Picture 1 (cartoon, rainbow, N blue to C red):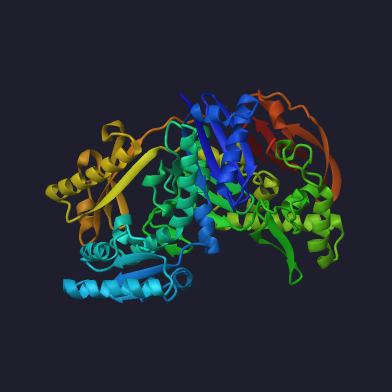
Picture 2: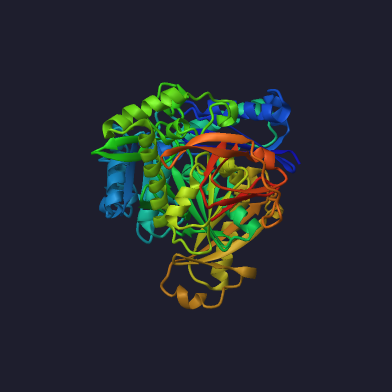
Length: 637
């Protein structure tokens, strides 16, 4: 088996996890939002140095079987409203149906605005051709450079196909200046017009920024003679090559990587209820794994608007290691704005002047400039202190130590409040803390939330990238059903099979090489179709409900194996030294334990500092830790 490279492109840092048989390597690089290909290839070059002791990108890529990539590029484009000017053609759907919810009205105003035209999709051909032509010309004149077509009603698919034939004839795509047109039924099947059309709108908006970068990166990888195409990790937990991936499927895919890693972690350690706490540079992402499954929504929301997509229940809160901490109306405000990786926290010395929690933890002595970021990134305590005094201390009339303590309290409380509102805390709840900032003061967060057990993965700093590695190549297609009669099921099965076969051909695999799974949708409820048999009780539920058959084909890919167990007798950990840190308003010399020194397993208790190349954790009094052979750490109170 060759190398497996998993990449998670975040707003502040981009994480790389390389699986080489039983060994796992990781590294990070600062995200370059102005050119994502820069941090993409810089990170790969760093990974080659980690593996080979010297930079040899060609050797790394030639030894690699698969590269799986997750990116926040699409998510960030939507948040920042950086995308194409969309035009919308609606057939037998009133625009007001798309803006009933206040949030939907706000997003519609931002992405579509006045660029919307309605027409009757049932008129005779000549009249429809005239109306469709006028609609496109009107939208183009209004500044639209990409068009979405959505039809409604029982004959919605027929109406969209009629419009597609007409517009292809009137505006051939091979002509210069032809506007790209997306038809909602080409993207997804959903009998609820509003959800389906919104899904198409989001896909059209996200497509251009994703396309430019990803195809450029894939072409550069081809220049290195990589064995297989770049795989894009999707928000459904699976992966596919760029040409077979809808842009909307990349939305929130990074947090889904953390959720998949949490699911694997919970399964390995037999944890029934695990809350994933992923604190990166820009956001805190929360997920819940119960009984081996990631909690998900059958119809997920994007930017607060309900769509046709099933999405993991991930709550993203604007608080992270690079979140701006400021004083507003006499109180401390944490985020949601972030300084990202450029200019970054003030201590980075890249021009940033705003205060962040990273600056606070450096000024408090928790972070060591010599070891931070594996010793590869220089951080300046003087710059951090200056930013804290200017942005927090002086406005509140606090000295440096009091300002740092107030920043930590506000930051930890915002995370804890988000955690408690996301998931009910039960006695058997375990918190998994990961991301570069996840372990910082996780004991304080857990105490505030009422959680008494915390798990810090050995790969905490790159855990979402690690989780991306649990994905397989998969495609699923849904076909509407007329009824549950065998003949109707057979017709739908044939159509779904042909669609899946074509998708797999584009991936380089035959249908016979894959695992197949059939499901029956009754309304918004999914039921398994084992052996092609309709499950008991489905017929009764099907009366008056929309029906569909879905076929999923999965090509399994190699993945890392989890090792290590807790509960064994461990030797007492040996302190690497001490670290003088500001804790609860006083400076204390705490024992410092290096995770790399505990490879065979160890135990200890707080107060203390646990440190690894890419993360640091302050262990509070009353908390104990156990490190197993894999480097995973269990904290208990």
